[in-house]
Length: 232
Image (tube, rainbow, N blue to C red; front, top):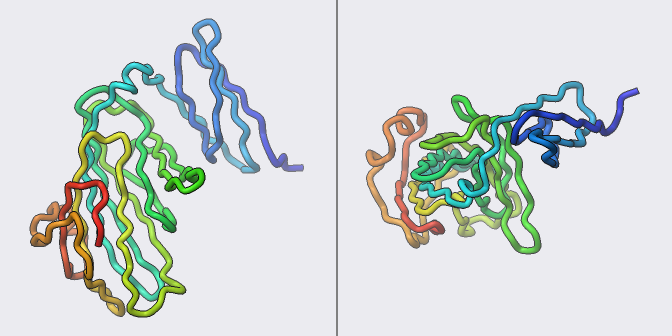
């Protein structure tokens, strides 16, 4: 018979951080120059275990990073879709975990990069705190790392003509962040800004060329922001 939950215990030399997929909380203990990792994995046919050298706590606490986020937004019947391109630039320290605060009521569908991401999860916020997207990397990054996030928000139940706030990501543990928001012309639904707070209207030619070239739909409005909480 298949086992509902499997108990795994792995002993590795040195100080390591271990990740298990499907996602499982992993506890660590250090014993005589080794790391003992323990995890409980839900029912599955395959388990992937990866590890890399742990980042020293003094380096983690000394991390200094900037973030740049580009949001491409379009609407279809009943759903608002967002494709976000995120660039972290590390100026001091190193890390193998990146975190972003999620807007309310969004569903993350995909997190991907050309390489380097081992797993991701959405951690529910306590009480009224927002949810956090946690991205796990297969190495400690010391310079830059770029990746994409696709998410959406249901508009079912929204009243026709009601103002809709554009859900924008916020990079956590970033000393400075800035970004752009591009609203696309939809085939059936168009997005027209009615409030422009902490944003500046710009030309679409200011979007990175790679992002513009990947679009198959006309850009209707483009904005940039330097505050962590723009409102459209």
